[in-house]
Length: 128
Length: 388
View 1 (cartoon, rainbow over the protein chains, first blue to last red):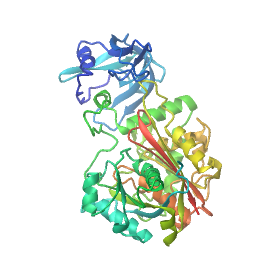
View 2: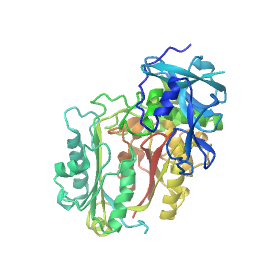
View 3: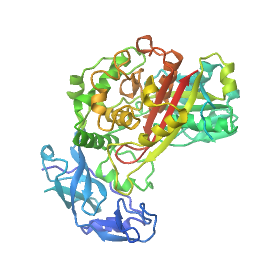
View 4: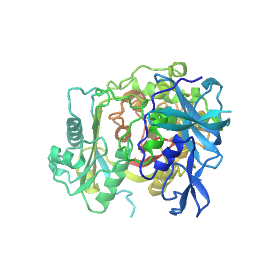
């Protein structure tokens, strides 16, 4: 099991408050564009794929696969950053938790979970 | 309008310091500027264009501090590649008649100031839209680059030993540079047995952290021909930005895949014509990725290409970073672009350290990656320089 590390709290903007409010309720809110029918990440008011302003929040299924990861060994508590390929399509920069870092592999399935920090929760993933 | 043959790099200077606890950042810029102007026989009064980036303690402030009287100012920020970019921008300004003598400076003291450059999140601007989606997850420079390395290994079978050859080659060059921070020749085993920082990158896959400075003077052709130094012409220059595209990113390629071909097209040459390359080496994977994207080998073949000393001057087919690069010599202000341009000019002038000087060096390529990481967003700038 991985121990917890010190998390730098995010500084939400009016544009992203919904993302962090959802996370506190243990939901991963993604932005979806009703013009080009695609999700994007990180969330924006205007779609970076087609530049439409018809974007809306949609909760993610909370499933994905590991696209790439790196275990940060030179840290007080080693931790893993990862790009997760979400079931909805986009890659999301996150963390891998609740696992033996030596057994994690690219391509492995993961499930959404949450790490606590003072005042909020961080959407992270645990390998299946 | 092409900038081909419109400008020359006339003056260069790499500050010899690697630890400058007794100097100010502005002073490092000024001492570097003085060095580059002396190198080509010009004075501060000749400078009518000034270029700097995010390491400068204010661009307008620097113009005031240096006492310059300029009619063209460019403070474009693109991280460590800013100064490679600046050479192209200076050539554009000169071609457009906006200035005749462009001064580019860099300086900084991350070593004296104890900056944990790659291993802790560095937040320059809390309002930058990406920060809240990276810093809380502990994304740092080194683990972002490490994910590119991990993905390259997964997709193409690249190995840690192949990456290590890049550091080995740099160390072979650094042994001849009296100012280099790390002059000891290392082996592949030394690299892969050094402590892991962010898997799969080891300590010796990472560049040094050094204080220092550097400067370049770019001038119009008539001025270059009136000076005493060998003529080094800007034959091609291009830039490109790559980013995470709303979550659709290929971790294994860089913006050099676009800036490289554009610079080659402007110069009218191809990778096989190049005698020497300066390649940004924040990490070993940075070099491997750029070499592939610039067309020196096919995508995915970089591991085989860099192995067995192929980047060592006098040994391999493509001598690189003959000053020891950022991996062994110097990475002043955490920004390695200016030293890449400086060493390419030394090679073209025939002024490199004798043991690493490339024979009949006529065409050199400089490439820098900066302003982020391979794995999220960055700017690539490519220069093709020619000894006339």
